[in-house]
Image (tube, rainbow, N blue to C red; front, side, top):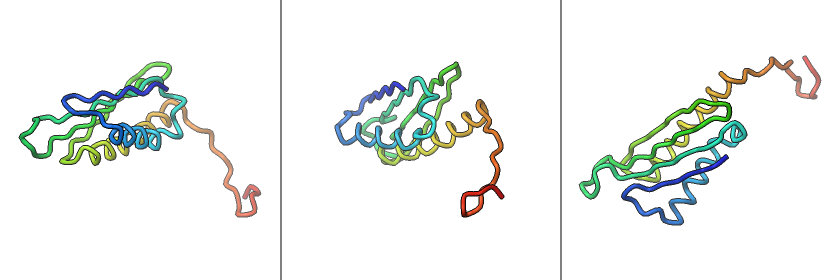
Length: 115
């Protein structure tokens, strides 16, 4: 998977880059093999005017075609990134389940034997 992080009118500090990478890694841990490219765009929508205007946009390109888009806007950029990553996790899981339905597995008892 290729991760592309861009800051629009925001300095991408080492701490910010580390936060983005950590949140994305946690969000797609189970589905990373199915993702070709993930674009992350963070920006301050209305600049120095303040308010709820820090945006994190995530665009996922899946292997085999198809893209998905997630975004979150918050007062705090770190919170926007965290919440967008949480949405990404749910979206990728749904998309993955839709594209690759799992086979039904037998239920196991506590001893590890089929019930």
